[in-house]
Image (cartoon, rainbow, N blue to C red):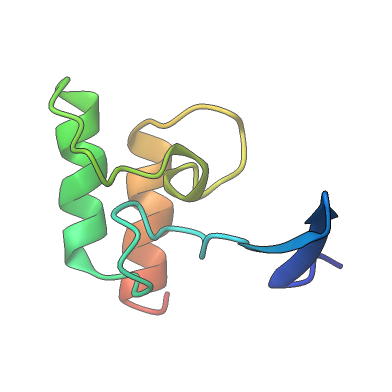
Length: 79
């Protein structure tokens, strides 16, 4: 099971890494219709500066495509 956060130490400094929420393509910590728009824009070549490729790959197949849009829709509408 993946922990939502992990800590690492580098030269005495601690860093926290927060795993992205699946489907949160725009990194606002909420999965909603804006994430669907973010993925659709990415597919059209209009990637924004906040686009999170890892979170946008909602089905975990390594590609960001229409299947991920379908998964994000399911998350948003709890299907």
